[in-house]
Image (cartoon, rainbow, N blue to C red; front, top):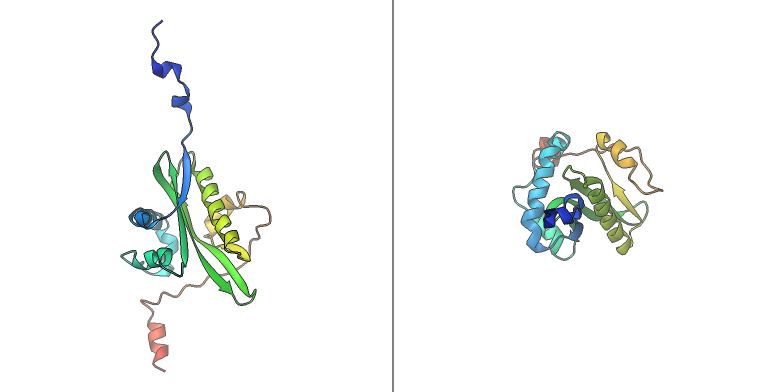
Length: 181
């Protein structure tokens, strides 16, 4: 019987991808920007009220890496290749008189390991929220994504009935007109 090394190691053919998640460093800025662009293109129909994004990543880079840190991001890798990212920011609630952490975006490319990558990214954000001592973790989602994500959320996660208004400042003649008064 003539066998090869491939015949003797079936785990190669059936092995699952190695999934890792790590916090973004300044060396990852170009990669993060590319993942954000890919994500933005897929959700462009949801994002039109936010206005045009900035062409460069200067403000994002400042928020991620300059003191005080205002944004945090993680990249998920499947078999060493970028597969998705999550980003979050901290804020302060006047009503609760304390800080909260908000998931700004969580994007994972489609594939067999997408649910696990989403879970791992979410857990990194949750861990940072706890590390920062935040009162709660918040996540605004488009209505068409809530059903899919709901089953994956931790017990105790409460859906709120809010309407989210957005007024793009770069194109708003309303604000320019009102500021003259």
